[in-house]
Length: 224
Image (cartoon, rainbow, N blue to C red; front, top):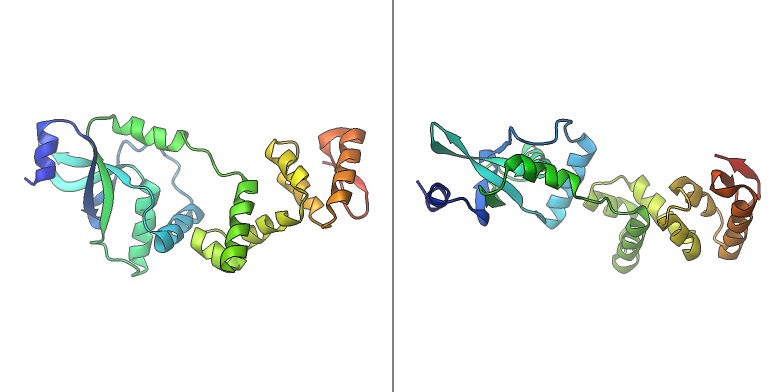
């Protein structure tokens, strides 16, 4: 029995940092997520880990059989990251013996930890993505392909976000406040004339509300 398992046996712990070989990490039977992670999500995580390392630790508890630790650990938070690292191992980018930084938690309910990680998170707003992608493009000279590869998203998505740079800051704020959908906002990117965009938006909003969409160039209104 090592120092970690001695600690576990003595009293419940939370937040103890340990390093566990990737091959000894297992999916927790108490994982709250029943619908599996999609391939795109795992690819995105794998790309992030490849370029920036493991930003967020996994949370684990020891696997116990017949009252004794087996040496393996159940992942109670971070199953997607585990799968992403396994994908990297399959591609020979890392070994299955790769040490993975984890938080050991035997104090809190594993099912609650798993549920908490999946519920208490807020996806980044596309407008915020645009600003960060634009910074990387301008400051580091990265193109859509490079940015996409580093964050596990398609170059098409990056290009779409960067196109928001043609939109008036005023309309971008309206979008942030849910006054426009992403598709409606993208229609304004057809022209880089911010004054024209704002003029069309005011007319659109006055004439038929947010259900309308006007082509910023032709001025033709269509109902969504």
